[in-house]
Length: 223
Image (cartoon, rainbow, N blue to C red; front, side):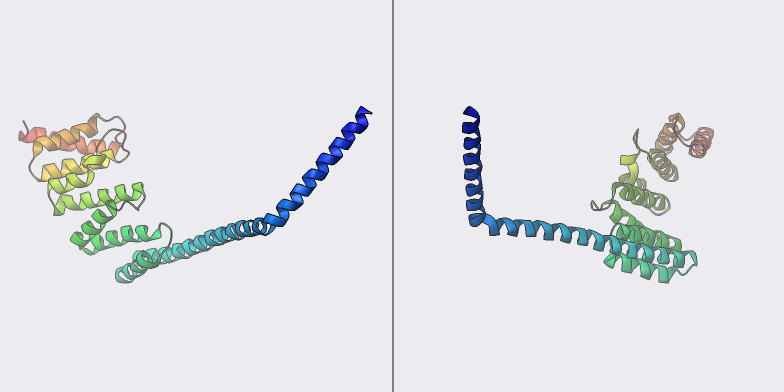
């Protein structure tokens, strides 16, 4: 008898749940359907947008390669025009890469001031990837060795001339050369010594630093 009672209770509970479900569906069914449709449409739109952006970035990549070919063919003005178009209309990371390459071409043309200004601007652009900002600051610093002051070089790269920074060797060399050019042999010696004392310094960079340390020592100009 208990078994039959349990079965009866289960049937009643199932009936009640069914009635509640029908009641909820009648009241909220359209809303639930609407939500489901919005989720489906949102997912489709997101995937469509991702595909569109990927395609646009791919097209921009093709344009960037075409600009590089123009540069390699010494068609500098045409390459600069193509890169300018990518800067304003490109997608993905290509606009900032186009700015970086355009600045390098300006330097090759002999317009160091314009190239330095562009590299410096990229180095301060928080929207650009950190690696690209650092590379731009380094390029600006090396141009400033011949076209600027030690203070300008320092403003670009001294923040990178610290332990653990992968660009510290180039930064220290740029600072040392700039100080040497300015006649500040004491400061130049300090930077070159940091390179020589760093066991991870590339051999060619360490050799140049040691050569300049020997020149400074031989000149007797540094205390």
